Image (cartoon, rainbow, N blue to C red; front, side):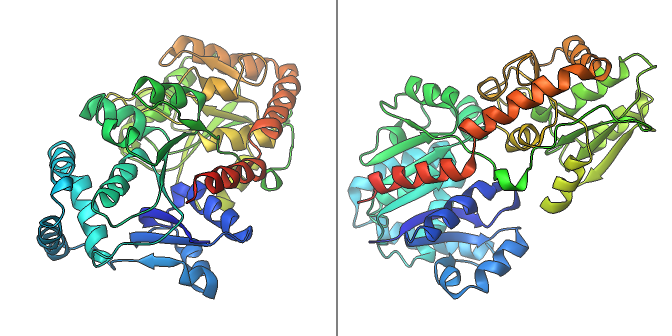
Length: 407
């Protein structure tokens, strides 16, 4: 069997463990896999483990130590020469270059790194719609000659059409031998509305063995520990949490922990000071995954009131929420993107509308004042995760899906 090819701008990446999880599952099943990445990602330990394994190392191709301006210019010059012999590819190339020059340049870098030689494989997998566009260009140029699967997540199917136009993905979604894969039912329906006639759906999931069920109870002798894990950015809703916490009755005992970094960190720290919450709010920065799991295990209530960012950016289905629900932590979130597919209000967690600070405040207050709700919410949540978001089961489903698409 020809290998399943993964096309990645960088690999491996800390925030994209779902990619390495898929690859590891395919390889463990005996399916040959090849990863083609422009550059090495930031998951240093995972990269070292791959390079220390001869089989994995042979399957990983890093095209460039780094992308310099000279590399970019050389890639474009070589691409022009290549396209002279492929006039049928001129129009689609020009269209992508006009709408997303960065993606056209990325495709040129892949092409040059592969010496413009056609690659063999059974199917190419592209995570995120933007990478799918790159992969489809490489197919148009005759460099990838196999069917393509593009996995849509969040930013790629929310912010990109918002910024680039609703028809941005039309050429990809209607390309021959291309299949779209959505991680939520919401995105599956969105793809249909964008012209894809048969998008597939397979959710992500969590390693249940890494998150044993430990239903939380009201702590004694210390404040209730609230926690949010995620990038400090508008769509994660940390600013909404701070405003909600400031509106709680002063008699309630709590502390709030934020794990992650991001573009809103300075603003969130300033907001914390202005709201008089400095003594009760703790910023931990970015932590290794084992330490993050330890923080989660020591916390009582998980908060992630996601909202649509100004640029249209939306979540897919946050793995952090799945991990919290799996571990037995009462969880508060919002009616946003695919989250209601995971949490049913007053059954497996508490939801409010995006940006509704008053309702968010009420949900936090309810859990702080009514610990008898916790066992019902956490038990229902764990059963939901076990039934629909068990990563081992979903990876097996993904492998079957890929084998059906392979040439």
